[in-house]
Length: 546
Figure 1 (cartoon, one colour):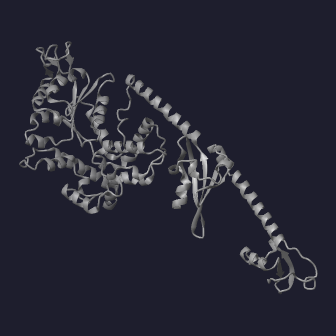
Figure 2 (tube, one colour; figure 1 turned 60 degrees about the vertical axis):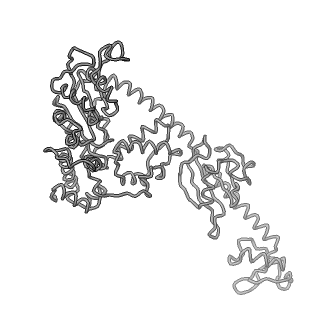
Figure 3 (spheres, one colour; figure 1 turned 90 degrees about the vertical axis):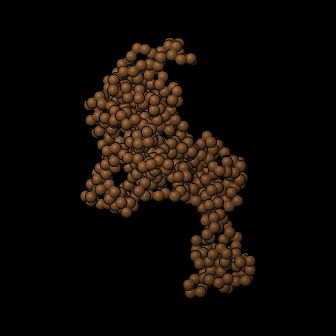
């Protein structure tokens, strides 16, 4: 191809030949054509034998290119309008460059009002995914967000790049506000149904006594089996376990299994009542027993539990002078109300619970040994959450449903990266701590997307997480180490709490190891500890390989 600086003569071109734009050689770009026209209004076209085939005038090419541009623009606009979603484009200056009728419908903003204007004039900048994509290059797909407080949408966003530089951002959004509101209405109605179910449950108690105990791990199933055996006897039960493991739920399960549906379940927290009021709370008082007393007198917890179960939580916190009187109740099944002269019968079964090492307290003269043996007829050891991490998923879903209803949040799922952090953590606060964390996640999740940064600092990757022997150390060992700095070493009686816990943990390890086919590496991974820690733990517990 060659060009001429003057119009071609009739001798060189026997007739005028007009070539359509598609016949322009593909190797000739527009940037080459324009400089040619600056020298001559004609462009000479030759064939592969360097023979002149014709020429093109500047006006012909410009008209054809303009027409081709209009045709391409018509195709593009029709395609975008047919896409069925709200499409928008912002340019490098963050001004709206394109706005479909779908966007007009969703946002109630016309094209004439918004095109050419800064997008931040119409939406809060912190809610605009397009701006975030423009500034960071972030690409998102089907992300739920709120461009306005009254609007929910699923958005796809992608940056527009030219020569490696971001020159704009495109967003496609689908309005899901109706679906979200319907879902919220459903959650609201579900909440009402649950309230009604609870009201009905008070009239017709839950038939499954284990309904509130969430989890299907081997340790939980073993606890349930132990409860079934306990429920066949009227014996006093002592429940042992760390704080936050849900000891009251297990006590209620024992009660539901062995008592009639109408039998009362009365719980009292021995650590939450002042010593001066404890006796009157437990035994009640007669009228005129002391200044300020109810003139009619008051029934105590033992009398309220008549025909049912009295649950003494945190029994290790009971004042020493009350321990003697409780021992009398257990031995003689009778007591005197405060200010009373007539003996009353204690017709209730007693379940006690503690997170303390009672044998160690006995050695320090903080708990009566005779009361301990009266309470410890049958004991139930509740495993900490770190020894049943496979239950975390079920517990999390239960708490998520509870708090989604309570705080009116739409949360469909917790992403895998958040679950990974939940499983890595050792949960010193056990199920109670997990419940608090899920409540925190629910409160902080405003757009339906749970993010790792919503977790407490102790669970985030920046926190230092250690997996050592503390994973399997019981609460008794922890308390003993922290409270014996000034005391002489305690002499434990036979079958101490620590020995029972060790035996229980040894049994669990053997069960887990057998389930893992004897593969210690697999077991260590399941427990979240190193193989060296597992070997040391097994050696300390006197366990042999399976």
